[in-house]
Image (cartoon, rainbow, N blue to C red; front, top):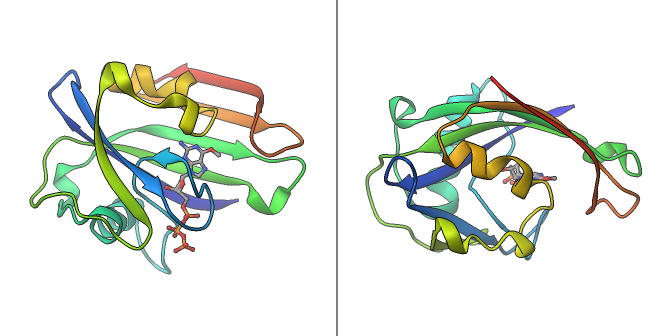
Length: 157
Ligand SMILES: COc1nc(N)nc2c1ncn2[C@H]1C[C@H](O)[C@@H](COP(=O)(O)OP(=O)(O)OP(=O)(O)O)O1
């Protein structure tokens, strides 16, 4: 299973606003999501998260700025080559301003206005808990269309 990261920049604790990006290319194109991607060879999860955050939306964080909030496994029985896990980080501090990149168009959302219908279908099951300060671990099994959630297990750490 390949490994990825997902960074969730927030303002306020508990979070009042979250920076999401509209994915413009590749896996998840057309959905809002946090910022992240695959590890490069020899990279730690935290180093990959810092690099992807900068590449995708221009925010400069250091590893000490990241708060590890858990891990999810995504399983796609109809397309096993898509299986991956994701290391999740909330990012409450950084330097710089959000900037559009070739991959993502960043946009701030109030927590009450998070566009779950335009996001991966799993997000509504775990993101609210993470934004309230919880750490989670979970496994999501997607349906035949690789979009709908067939089964999901989320537990608090
Ligand atoms: C399937 O459900 C998912 N839900 C959520 N919330 N986030 C997901 C899901 N699947 C993947 N992600 C995240 C994990 C990563 O942050 C990105 C995917 O990264 P990508 O495959 O685009 O990796 P990159 O290294 O950026 O890709 P390139 O090969 O284009 O450089 O989405």
